[in-house]
Image (cartoon, rainbow, N blue to C red):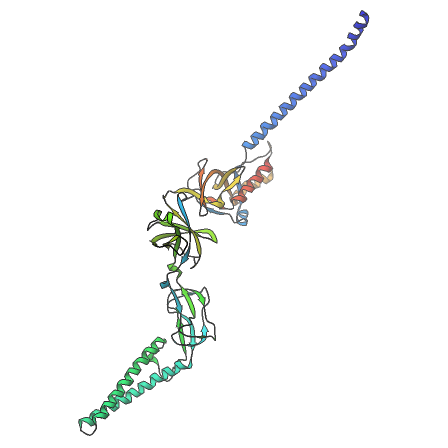
Length: 424
């Protein structure tokens, strides 16, 4: 029995040694795998920390995507009232070009959108009666000359007791009648735009000129060549957009917050890219129809290019005059849950290559840096947004007065992301 047990122990010993050896190898392999994983994780963390923040673009790329620049502006975006309204022109800055005498349109020299000056020719109107009126004026002048001579002859006869007093009185009455008629015709010709002192047998005018009564822009044309017009049928409408004012519709609860002299920032409802300013000059004292809103009248300041009578607008009224740094909405890009802007910088992009490796292409890039513009990615915290602008607070400081990218920031961020992926 002892012999059998001894033999079994002898046979089990090699198996124990084999199992122990395998266990040691497996533990060693596991340790190596863990070390490799830690090394890869450390490498990934290092790569994330070294994410590129400088992008370099050529002038051709900048031009291709229409990148534009601007600066951080100080805007009043907090504590505001928003109101809708429209642009309008006072009636004393609108006019119709009309003719006091009926006739047929012979020429028409303007179209909608044309800029005209006061007194500029709009159209010409033809009518045979115009010639008859001038003819009557010339005939009356001739009759007056004869009537004056007749009055003088009757006076001489009356002084010599050779004529009747009645004939002198008739001659005097006829002269007075002709003089009054001539004065009437004189004023009618002036209203027609004809100089009575220049009317003679050789220059009778068959057409009248319709002129613009003020400086402005043609907003509508009512006539066409060959159509009949008179004093009740205007030829064209002229609007002086230089006198544009803003009518805001403000609710009753917001009315106590407004006052004369307050600044209004507004944009066009259908085109909010441009921003304009106006100043309150009058606040209404009655509700506008059944809307329960009160009209607030404002005078538009500065450049009025692109503004037209009747346009709908959205206005922002600042209440506390607190200025905050702000940039256009398109200047901000979001990446990895954070917000960024790009500024023009003199810093160079990070160069990544294997140790001891320097290609000919890199050398060429260094020689061509004058054709590149570098942009630095700056993290910011967004605030309130109004009128196409967003308030920002930079996480880290950067040079004051730096130019920022106001349009095309998305492309630069994509370029930077592609560069980072390629390097990793």
